[in-house]
Amino acid sequence: MFSYLPYRIRNALLNYNENLLYELRIRVGKPIAVNYDGKYRIMGEHGREAGKGLIATQKEVEDIILSAAEYSLYSVTDQIRKGFITTSEGERIGIAGQGVSEKGEVLNVRNISSVCIRIPHQVPGCADAIAPYCLEPKLLNTAILSPPGFGKTTILRDSARLLGEKGEKNVLIIDERGELSAFDTGIMSDIISCIDKRTAIMYGIRSMRPDVLITDELAEEDYDSIARAKSAGIKVMASVHADSPKSIPDLFERYIVLGEKIGKVLAVYDAAKERLA
Amino acid sequence: MLKILGFFLLVACSGFLGWHLSGKWKKRKDFYKQWYLFNERFFSDLSYLRLPLTEFLKKYTYKSEFSEFVSAYEKSFQTKTLEIDLRFLSEEEQNAALEYFLALGKSDAASQSVMLRSYQELLEQKKNETATDYEKRSSLYVKLGVLFGLLIMVLFV
Image 1 (tube, rainbow over the protein chains, first blue to last red):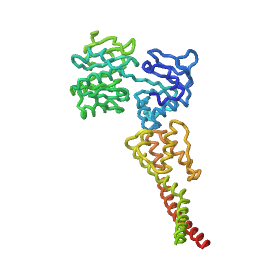
Image 2: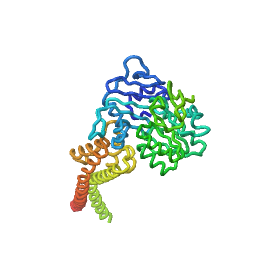
Image 3: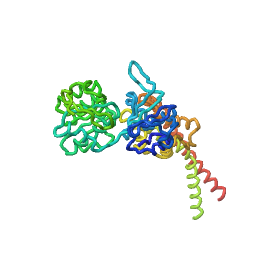
Image 4: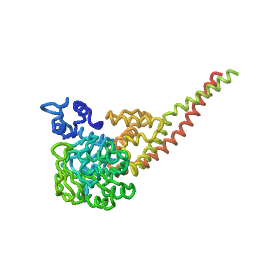
């Protein structure tokens, strides 16, 4: 992990417990910030230091992008156009910079001024928190909702593992950003990654004959594909950036809202969006 | 009898020395042949698999000085410096090689393809040129070596 980071940043990170690291924000000319145990802190040369932190340079940010792309920007152009790169370890690096567009289409991002590195975690058993509402005794079409950073992807990943444990259900994971499959997703999972959800769902349903479809970060343009999967008799589990089921179409039998702290279930709603718990 | 054997050995050694002296031209021939192959393979990969450079470089093995050059290039990803020893190439040729490799991976697939395609003809030309050069010179150097050996033989007989 972090092999793409400059030496001094990698060195400073050695002072942190990796299991409590959730995010790294590197901004050109500004102190590096780290989300450690749910709180943002300024990162110093020796880790958690008060006062002036490590200031990132433009060269360091550029090197991070090139290194994270395994020195091959041509292999991640599509990702960069969407504003991120996913590393081989499953870390998603969000990119902020100057867009280069033509006829309304983003060609590239240049003068990258900051990166946001989201660090994935495997938390075996974290899906137990939602299992009674949607996995057992019966698998229900489920949407997991929360703002960014509350563990939706981690729970979905563990759900895939749980579902596959008994060896009864084929789980198809549509991993558009390469994050879901960063860790063990169980013995019964098939993964289609780095393809847009619409195409991946269409091709996955036809070729992989899944019982369950799991995908991350649904957007408005994805709902048609989800409806199609459901009409094919496939159960769907997905995450959405939302804090309430009101903003989501009536596609699911359970809406599970996370919040307050990572992985905590705040509320559960049924298909009619009536609160159950 | 021993004398004759000695003289044959002398002529053979000087012929071999001649061949050895043509080593620079052999290195040039091999280097451009391998570089041409690299360019073709990379162009093909870019059109289809688009493997990251770190994987692509491991996928194929190369020969002679080009293989060492590729290893040094691979190491430069970590060390950030590229140290090369291409004395058998002219300064202009060395700069062209550095320019090519330092441009790899720095742009999108379309731009990278354009670059590789622009090098195809150039590298094929160089490959053929250096092969012809080597053929001419190695033959000449071997002949000169044998002649030299014969001259020594004549002088000392």
